[in-house]
Length: 63
Ligand SMILES: [Zn+2]
Image (cartoon, rainbow, N blue to C red; front, side, top):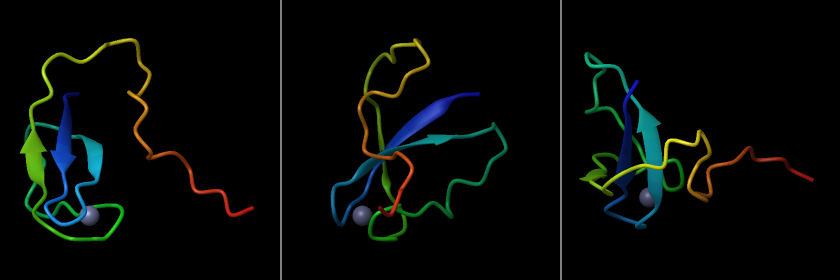
């Protein structure tokens, strides 16, 4: 499945979204500030190593 990168228009948070072809993208929200309608970012080529590119979207452990 393709991975798209989005940038929040409000807080500039960047996050990746895995989407199917028929997935509705209009309901996307920034994971940080919950603002809607993030901007699609075309970041060129992805390294297909399976690792994320250092984005801060890891699990939120509260300890
Ligand atoms: Zn945001």
